Image (cartoon, rainbow, N blue to C red; front, side, top):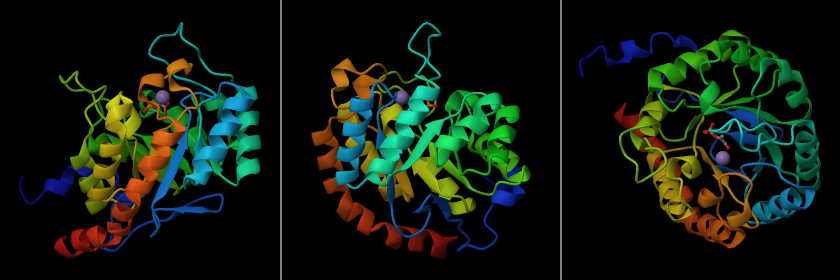
Length: 287
Ligand code: PEP
Ligand code: MN
């Protein structure tokens, strides 16, 4: 790669670092993302019932999560699969967030829904399948809520940054990037976790970067080690699927952790998170 390697990111001038130390901290309610503290977002793939969500929120908060995830609008591989509870799901999320002190992140799938989702959620998630839906990005940006932008499954790092730039250009600088695995020829994992993308993003871009080991892995046994590798690569946080009874989850049960597995993963990650600031320091001095 030549000296003009960074030219490929030229469409995203406002999200690139201006100095090696440059980094944005995005506030989700009272939770800073991209600062010194590593932040874990956790919860079920889909909001199913009040009991399922509340129980999960209480347990992930006790294990150290700061943000509750849960889909009320679900982009499924099949249009005939469960599509989410919609507004009822948003209300359950807001209630669970209030009860536990967790901030709430949930996906918005259509531009028309953006103001409604923003009433109930602290962070609007743009899913992989929507990363290049610029009308949706604009509507989400204009709500003023922080945006969690997931990398499209066939999107390059430059494509991801172009979508981030689109949100920033619509007046919303509060973007969090998420590596969730990309499509390759490999079938042993659901997607191929692109750890190199995390390192590149942390080197060139000032936005916080989180990792989604659940959708990358597709199998719960792989999730804790992928999570640890994301911490080691310098990620600012994680988004992880957790369910009270994964075998009976309405979506993505195979990759969802039980409460016990999530607790163990969080405890095991703690020493790695401690080392994270040293890792960032090394990156910045090399730049
Ligand atoms: C999800 O977070 O449940 C989800 C559908 O993620 P992705 O858009 O990364 O597939
Ligand atoms: Mn899912």
